[in-house]
Length: 459
Image 1 (cartoon, one colour):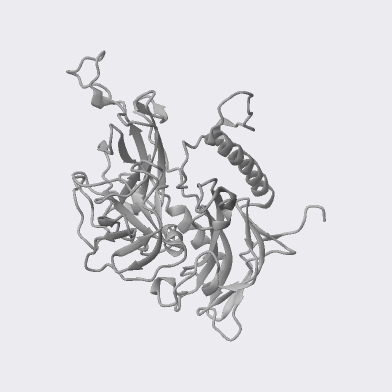
Image 2: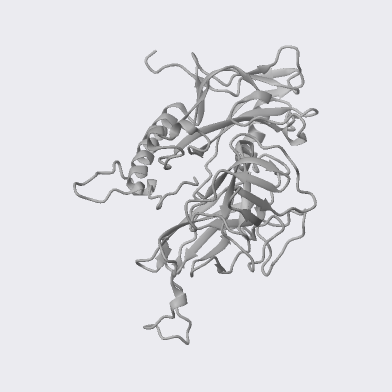
């Protein structure tokens, strides 16, 4: 999540059960956040062990799927209120809703990619993940006693859900579920990342006197976020720039502040955005030449678009360059290219700052080509290396997946696990998705049997 964190420390492989505060010690955000992660891990693991990967209560359970009265299942679906557990995560739907009016991710009826399959049977499924919520999305988080607008405080993690459809060739419920499960198992992002700041000396260098550019040179501690912007396979070695409008390869973007630097938008007219602030200081501000991402609640939901099941995946929005800033009227002028859409803003719009800049070779989506097998420079000595997972020739990457790289001035290095040959290659830190099949639709028939239910253990 894109919060202003020092680092994240939870690791289930260490089998810690609690964080124990000691008197007279410094309190860190990482310790408090790890305590919450420990409790959630234990609770969700226990529930999943008892109920299985997905189940709804037999009484009070939600997410039952049926056709909307007067409409075909291919046109709309009814989603019942109640609860369901996906991999131990409590998912709640407060009121009966429909496919087109589900609350966490409103769909555009004019968007062809949002339509339910018209000419094929399909599996209706629930997808669950977590999203960071700040006072920008929920103003009640901010304490008004601290002033207006007042300082930022703690953020929240929100469980987000979406009901979606996966077309299948199978004509029976059992075969459709097998096809659905096989598709989930077939695609797993295989790309991994290594990171470093202290570079090993070249054979001609004195090992006792490393040059100053072989370590982290930043003026303060940072939490770098390396995030997949456009998903897909890695670019061929030596790639410098992609062709506009193609999905020839994955791209990535990075931030030294865990992508937590954002600027709320009041209005957007063409390429000129009126914002509420230009940042607290130069470090957390906006400058001409910066790359920004235009985000609202709908776009934030589509960041988690399901490249596992969507074919083809939704293309990532192009990152924009800041061309001019009016500090008096708080106006930010962004660049435009042919094909950029003039779309209305959804709820809670903002600009998110990313920190890559020319002369780095940018792809046409404004991000960086994801090239494997070479150390790529970020800044101040920090480097990353993408590589495919074990057994894969080329890594595959999913939009929104990311790695967090803490950099520390005290050591001149990044905090990163090490293997026998240097920095280890690790899987993405997220996003974690959870799935639950809900129904099978074949023509006019809606079979609700894929949705599993359970009775209270005390009964």
